Length: 146
Image (cartoon, rainbow, N blue to C red):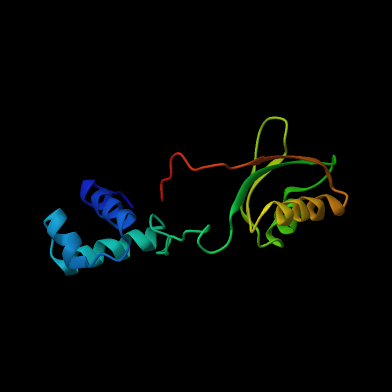
């Protein structure tokens, strides 16, 4: 799908507030509500918009500690195995295969440092993780929803 400036504006408005009505969006991009709906439907079909979600304040929900855990795996460990193991821990909210010293980086959220320490020990327990290096997030300086 070829996106135009109107599509980009619609996406920007939805990123700002996904609960906007099609009429409200239409007033910003000079289209009728049904025209906006057709465009949003097309953007969803194309994969440009994957879904709509609520933005949470994790500290208000009790997840006070956020950290980046660098994982160093034993030679021969496959990425599919890494992804499966990391996905089995609900505290892992994102994980990436990376270049550099580490093999992967996981972004984790826990209730506190004790739970973070337990998680790291669990990750190391299966033997494929040779070592970890963890950076605890003190504060968020920039946050973009997209």
